[in-house]
Length: 359
Ligand code: FNR
Image 1 (cartoon, rainbow, N blue to C red):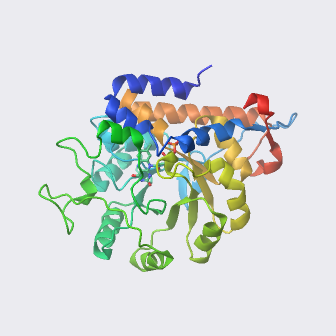
Image 2 (cartoon, rainbow, N blue to C red):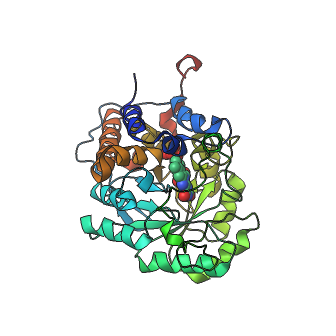
Image 3 (tube, rainbow, N blue to C red):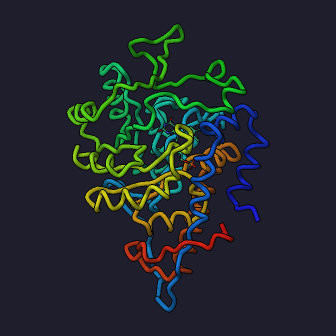
């Protein structure tokens, strides 16, 4: 049986230029990490409890003080105008209608101010977080942060798993290394180092250290989230450096192919953080039961990446909302079936390994 989301991906694939589909779907190297992120959920099962009244349950929550209809958020992804002409504005409307938080990518094809405005059109209380790659020149980084603040973003998600660009075989084969004519990474306009079209390239740097993060604290009062943590020692360091939350992520398998599935990395990180800050996870979340598994193991919330792009391609803002609303119904259904009356009841003792034959 194919899952509803696998079917949605197939519909999107039929609509997309195959080069752009490959950009969205693909990953680093042999795409082992891409596949393993999803497979890791299949290696686990939930032990349901019975005869526990679960009526009236609410799964609404708060993430770093921001309201969310469930412990799920939208992970940042680049270049939404490749998926739909209304680009990130449609995504923002769709996510706001589902009552969730959008993490807008710094590499968006619309400026961050238009993205937050689109979200607030639907729900004046909608929240958008801004994803940042530190840029080699501090004045460029600082200007990007000021743009996010002016746009009303309420948290800064710093992606730390990209000291260099990922090497994606599909993009290499397709020769896809830049946006088509007329599309730009709009947040990068009018910055020092801009090229002829007035847009600066997003750069990666191998020279960043924890000390650079310390500086960010003095530049913004937004809460800081580190995205791309996999090693428990880095999780411990994040707490030490006063980071507000971490996002366990391997970038959807797009950076380091030998990275573990994020779900497999989660238990050690949850243990290392010991509830001092929230631990989020993304990578391979494709059904409501995946959400529940990650929460039971100790995630405070999980992110979805590619499924949002498939919803956007197929139905614009409505497609995004529909995908997220379906996910919420699946979460609710799984919780009811497992006898869970409140999210706080979820714990790792409910999680068990599947027999090898079922994986
Ligand atoms: C991404 N991701 C990403 N992450 C980030 O920090 N900044 C970015 O600009 C992007 N861009 C991007 C583009 C595309 C096409 C994809 C698929 C992903 C990674 C993303 O935030 C997230 O970690 C993964 O997508 C989560 O995995 P799933 O849900 O796609 O399996």
